[in-house]
Image (cartoon, rainbow, N blue to C red; front, side, top):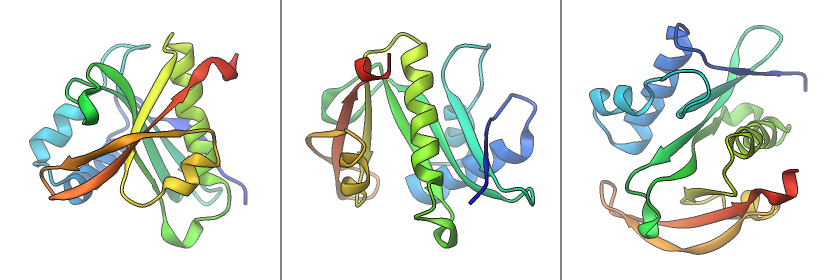
Length: 157
C-alpha cells in the first residue's frame, strides 16, 4: 500500500484536531488537556506529530512523540511514543511500522537514547520491532493495566 508520512505543523488544524479527538476518546482527557498536550512549540522541540496519508488524501493513521512529565512506572521527563493509531481497515500494511519508525528516528535525532510507550494490547507488535517490556502500571483514568515498554535507540545510528 502506498502512503506518505507527513509531520503535522502548527497551522495544520485538521490533523491537530484529529489527534486531539483521538486523545479525548481514547485517553479519557478533556478537550482542553488534549489541546495542551498537542500544542506545537518551536521547531525541533516536543511534542511532534505525524500522519500517514493515502494517495487519495485520506488520513490512515497518526503518531506522536512527547515528553511526559509524569509517565508510567515512574519514568518522568522522558520521550514517549503516544497516540499511535491506524484505521482498522488499513492495518497490517506497514503504516503503523512506518509511523513508529518515524517517531523513533525523530527521538534519536533529538539526542535521546531511550524512548518509552505504554500499551494495553499491542505488545507483540512492539516486541517484533525491538521494544522491551519494563513493567506494568495502572492507567488511573480508565482503571486498566498497561504494559510499559522501552527501546534503546543506539541501533538507529
